[in-house]
Length: 140
Image (cartoon, rainbow, N blue to C red):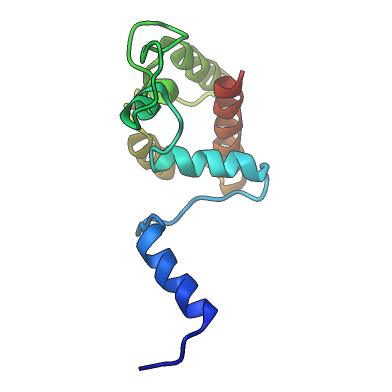
């Protein structure tokens, strides 16, 4: 039996409480930390969407998307399926002259993005542009 330390207690608590994932978290030094955090929360589906809030027992008037009013407001809907976000992706296609396939979730989008053949700097710029724009769309 070893000696008790604050560090050992913190590590034991973190191991039990923190989300453990084998995937590497994508961080960019070119965007504000809040954008990186939002991207991380998107990847683990921990954004306060209406569906997630309802699942936590928070009483909300409707779980429908306030933008299109057609589907429930889930992470996948907000970032990949809503008619509004589809228009945003179309603008990115024209701006970058890249075909963005229809994806239904973050993992599908990430798989496509990782396979995208662009110069390293262009790829980083494209990914950062998409992430920052999506954050701006959700916040506004």
